[in-house]
Length: 405
Image 1: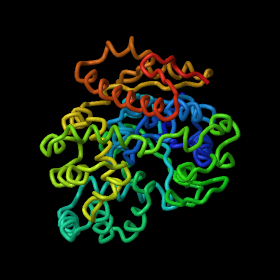
Image 2: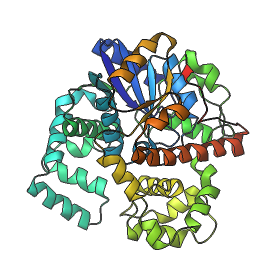
Image 3: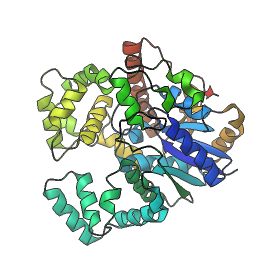
């Protein structure tokens, strides 16, 4: 069986994602598509706009065969760590032949992304010197890296100004680091780009989220017909935004000192000081992030830091997750009814424990994996509370039966 993997968020799922799934099957000739999807918290450091089971069902209805949940240590991380965790997941399954990803500039080809990736993995001394100068000039690390790379790859500054191009490079870096026998396929995004907020038949997830946040109805023309029944009830009052977690974040930060907040994943001491000083008065997630933002710390970096503080993900947790030979576990969110054989094959081949019946399967995990899973489940519990407090929805996560479509 030829299996292709996709690493995704589907926050929310839309026509562009359906196109990517269809093109993946067409271009790779695969028999099955396995999606490793962010769970309740996503790469920008936000709670997902909709429940992970709804997003998994959307993917299964529209072309995916199996959806696995990327642990929160990878899903709510930087592009490098998000891509690294996703690639480690696919490599650890030991039967995925190819990774398919989207990019704004797919026409430059996989080889261009691989060349930049190889260069970044090598980090020549002259590049590191230029990078250090750019950082010392007050640029954020992401901007400093793009500017430094432009000295060696003239097109890099433009390429790395777009989020999916950045992920393309990080996927290739991760494939090189793992040494897994997984090829890659790049497919062009068909919308106007991640940051475009106009609504159309093919638009970005950002545009849909902003439409909902402004009180508009879900733009049903932007999603496949197969999932319009899932999306029609979604409004600003039935979806989750970062500000819905403001009270939880306030309580979490009030429990921290400068020293303990500095032990949280990806929060250095100077950022911890800024966060604590700005959080002495009542705030919303948005107002706090905006007040902390500065030239050295981008808004996205701050949102991820706040997310890690909310979820109590420490540097030690992140190190434990990243240093393991393979991922400690993967939860199976859903499978197509005609793909049960695929799930059986994966469970037989995978080096990574696949958790289908959580309360039963988790007992076979190592002790370090159980510790990481406990915090992952805490993140799911916090999201369930957000759903209940805002939408009146009671979600059973730990006792939920496997979603079959």
